Amino acid sequence: MDNQLRHFAIFTEDMERARSFYGKVFNWSFNAYGPSDFSQINTGAEGNKQLIGALQDRKYQLTEEKVIGFECSFSVKDVDAVAKLVQDNGGQILLPKTEIPKVGWLIKFRDTEGNILCAMQYFDSEQ
Image (cartoon, rainbow, N blue to C red):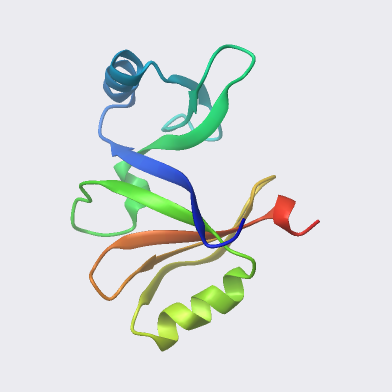
């Protein structure tokens, strides 16, 4: 599905503290993926887990000011077209098209209201 929320990220300053907090509050489980300062968030019973988001170090926020809130990623059909639309309509590209191995093509941008968002062209949508 295109143009729908598909993933969110929560910025952390202490990965273990954040994992403990969200694990206890929402009963989420976590698994390492990529660098040690990044964890996938899963929900659901063992064997039927669903990937819903990520905990990630604040260094990935790409802005000088501290982001308080979730960084949301929207599934799009054509990330290049979305990047052009962002720029044409007053937004600012913060991270140009970048491949996330085995996942898809990602851009991060600031909207006209100062919010940070992501658009992801998932590889599974290209098949």
